[in-house]
Length: 504
Image (cartoon, rainbow, N blue to C red; front, side, top):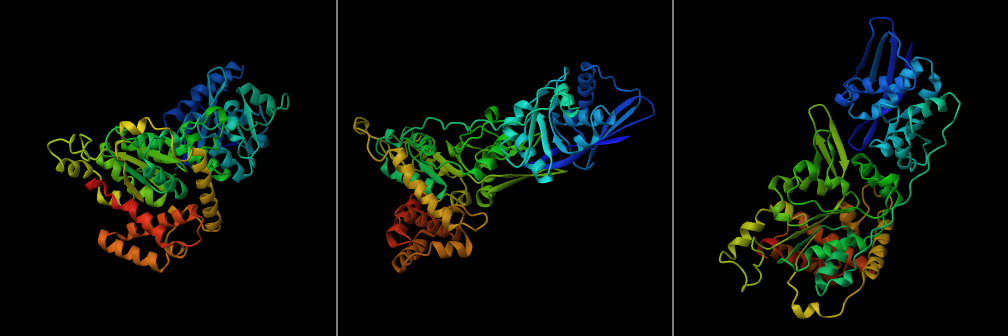
């Protein structure tokens, strides 16, 4: 008799349904798993056999064959243990066939039958909901999966609990969603002394999701400014929180099944590899750019990152997704992030201070910033210099608006953009606008258009740079509460392109 159970295999952030076919037939005793299983899946036969033995269930002296269909789809991970066990229990007529066929299951088995939490419960619940099935998983993973309201999620502590549930002895209650994680304690912008221009650039970047580069000598406050960015960003919408949490679920970053409404802030070290930044490795896991989806990727000491790592950022910045290719599979991860980069103007860091710069100035600055290619530099909407702060400024009382006041203005601008792009697929903020939509929403008045044209000729702006100035001007107008893009908005947007990092 052949029984059928269902689980999922992960291709990037997508979960594909896998049918687990179990056949117990006469022949020499054997237990084989076919259908492109990896080492962890092949070892499931020993975990399943021992877990069943701990429940006093002995496997018959027959040939047991487990087929994971579709057979040409690679199967990776220990979460296939539970569906294999369910298929085997159904084939032995210990639990009903129809009950097993109506659920998607995943979970790792300990040798004593305890269910161990696994990665990817949230995208698995999404796939189960699309198939019209319930999800069975370890109880610790159930709080995470239960956030998908359209899917019934059942969490169990052990395989014996699952058997009692399907035989009607002790039905398991549906899992409840985990707690919404509180936002981390914010750092206030008023803690930053001086740097009013940098604060303004940070506000514009937050309002329109623009990429921003800080260039300045060591200790001028670049990292301090970037660390204040999460405190002025609006919380994730419900759909954004689900998108981000699905990626974090695959990476094992959801704490006790809780979903966060605050935007991710990732800050990898400059020694990180390409696989760590972009994604990949043995199981093609999401990288830092995907973990920062709908949030911020802060790359300090930007020129110190390997050149090949920096160049791989160019395509994800434009498309908002990254495709990791393997010989037999392709994995797609979303990565719509806001890039904040910080760099010293040269290796010694004091190129802008003649009395402290090294003997190789200014050629040292050209060599150092030359590590960043022109096409990558062109993708930054705002590039500003962060001057050093004088000792007298440090003794002054806090000045400028607090993070709460700036966050209110940013939230208002984001609300305007949300209404503006309602109905436009793939567009949520001004940074996403392109084509006719950009021409329609960011067309400046006559004086602004003349100024933009002269600046484009004098600065040698590329078509990409020209459009990025238009997007920034639109965001400045939104912060100003203006429906039209006027000359002052264009002038301010251009001013953030004047500081070319190579000449800092």
